[in-house]
Image 1: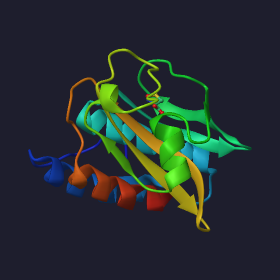
Image 2: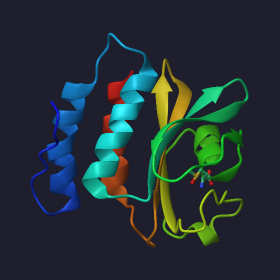
Image 3: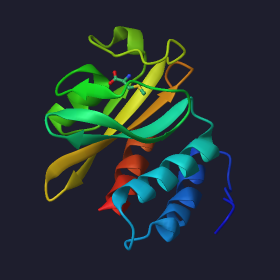
Image 4: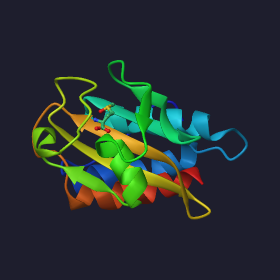
Length: 155
Ligand code: SME
């Protein structure tokens, strides 16, 4: 597959048409970084987010992984920022306004809202998917539900 074909106008329809295409591209014969790279690219292209990417758990911190968008912080400590908190709490965090999230790490001042979805392998968080929007209130339960399904394709 070389191009994405996204049908529908609603967020739900877009995710529903994107999900099987991401599934088709995931390749179990290559490492997780390659698959994260394509997943980030496909999400970013479909929705035009500000920043879409992964941080991987390496030792006791999160390290920047494959992403699309402006440059970002390379290290995030356990329990710090939205990413480190999602890792610690082991669940998705939807942040409608990053300025209201205590300890939010501003990699980019243009980021206004954010969603972070943990990636599990053998019941351990091995990475987080982090998506930033330049607008407030971009993410909701629909994003959480589809993105949680999508990241299961990585393991
Ligand atoms: N805002 C994130 C840091 C990562 S950047 O947004 C890419 C956080 O608070 O964890």
